[in-house]
Length: 390
Image 1 (cartoon, one colour):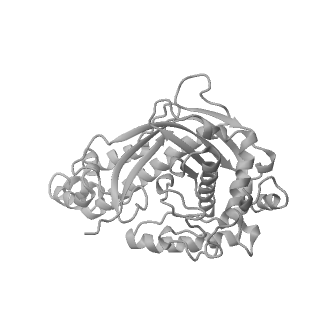
Image 2: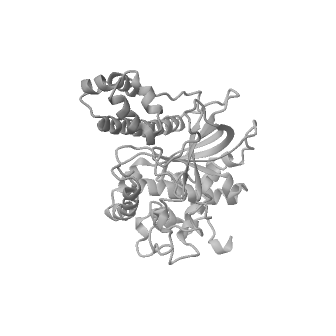
Image 3: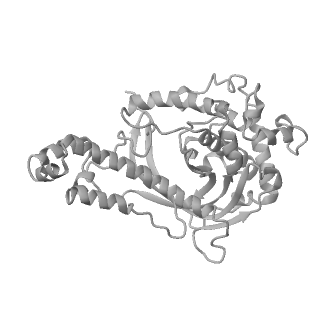
């Protein structure tokens, strides 16, 4: 008997200054206003049974409420599902946005106490300032990872995937979780450079081609639900995270599976564009500092230049750069195991949505990459040795 691959669905949060993330007040007010005492009961009902349960209630205690709201049982079911999807999506975005605000705050946090969160801002070296606005050494971090369900065969589409199987047949008031402590490096992209780069037609067309493939698959699995937008910005930040992790494993001595990414990207309407590369352990003392020290001003520029230089060529080129060997289920451009792919436990997207051409361009269009000018400087006499001499 063939057993399909299982994917654990995790909710990850970084604890920063004891921030508490709660249900948006507007969502609570709307739910109470429209459904009163039925809201809590209906949202806790198993999604597969909710429609039938509402039909049963509509013949009795819920009948008057539906009449006052001018709703049918079917429309009420759709409304609840849409509200839950919107809430979970907003909750996850708000969670990351709160983390992002603290990381880009511009001042050091936690140096004078023994708390779980300490950051130190680094002056961005001149040679990489056109590409990054902020670099932060995360000296101490505290991560909480909660297991909320599973999927089979395919990873979930998003946090609201109806194929996520809960851990228990019955509603529970708790979920298994672990706390880990560690360190990392946060890098925020330069918004001016980023906006100019992502507005290029050739960049948008390349991202849209992958978006179309992803949308076809999404519609097969989640008919009627809007497809998450894959932007050039996301491909850039995500691929850079993998390139940086790859380089840091060489320079810090960590195994590739020990490092993880946390991507902070907003859509075209926002400026959120950054990545946190970190490592963490269940030991109460956390890790030993080797990763965050790599973010020091004297160290980070050579690391960035070496990471970009390494992305210029892949041992599987020209097949890789021409998108011949990228697994179709990864919805990536130029990316393979020889260049961009990381251990799946390190990647938020299970190695999907990667394209190193967004970093360094194509053989016949070197200028399309975000780091093309930096790569040209390295090739013209920078301090990074060619790969075969390292």
